[in-house]
Length: 166
Length: 391
Image 1: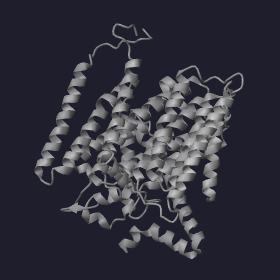
Image 2: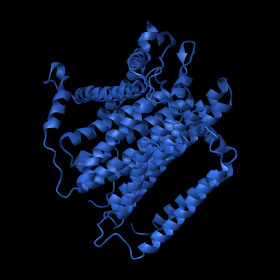
Image 3: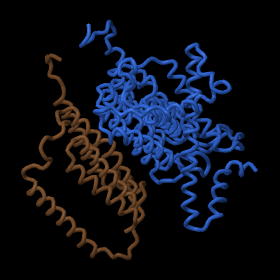
Image 4: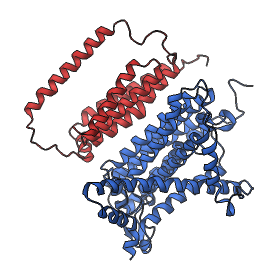
């Protein structure tokens, strides 16, 4: 655990907390972006270049922009009048804690099966690319098809009907 | 001697690092490289502002700035002092924190892009395995800072400008990435250093730059179009169309924050030109084998400045596009052509050497260009413009 890790962890957690506690929706979106960035930097710190850059490219470059656009184009950009907590916040907290506990349990248990001495495998971006288009080509294509179908669906929903007045 | 001159900055850095003890030396080494980038590019920015104002002036039949210093070359100094001493106004209704952060985020993010560009032989801050991916990931983050600037100003012109800018940048990021992927396919690496090395070979004294292949030429043209749109330069400068939106997303910025936006825009131009140079124009390699004795960094910076001159020339020549033209052009013309170009690049890779692949690849690209262009033209019913909200 280095200093860099602690700085990044603090940034990520602070971003996540700010995203759920801030009143202004756009501030929340920006805070969650900070959390995304912290996560990407954590990936980079673990030498996972591809995962880190993909995180920045997809989450900061696309998802955050999408969220922000969605907030602006709908009526959500006003500040909430009464507190940011919904009535079911306790149930939500319990569920989140349960999910976190299961994940933590799984991670802690998996540490036993791997020998701690084994050096981390050096995975180049080239290896990931090779794996994606050879062994995992079918899942990749299915995901691509799914995303295309989703995009076509979104366009159809947004499209004007024939004869519709503009 | 030639070698020393070529590596002079690298040797200088090693000499300084060698003077210091171990861990401190490594730290100072990184600091020196960062300081060089942070010093050189704003210096170039100052030069470019004069060049642009003088060049545009000449194109528009005026003289341009000529009062400050000999031939007006001290104009950027005067501009810098002016923007430092101007009052920094933040609108009352503005979101102070986000308003303050936006220009900082923009400049920091744009500076980070330079860290992977090889500016000469052995002259790059970090040689990343996924350098190109890093560059695009960083480039995607600038959109958010533009949105922050537009939204936090609480001004409808700012917000409209930001929406336009973000929509435009997202649309043109796709062809930008797609045209670069062709280079990655041929080189087999995402590392910008390896991409330059692959182009640094000569046959009969002529370089193996990617622009001199059919797919590379097509990709370069589309990359240049997308890069111009990505940096919000004319003819794609709708986000700051002054006749419609005052100044777009930085309408409510004054003083040094405005200067930071200006700096960010020009640094974006430099990094995009640097990337284009690296991908298609051979990076730091000399244009002729006989010219290899000239230091590599001179070649890199001359190519970048040449691209900047072309951008200034375009700004003085072309009228601004309309929003729907901009979007149609990106999605209906540039994107299909880049997809086709990926196919052509694969064909080029697997057809083996010979004249045949030149003919086949060029024929496919030219044919598609003519056919797509013709059908698009036919679908457009040219006639009097109709307005939806004005008469």
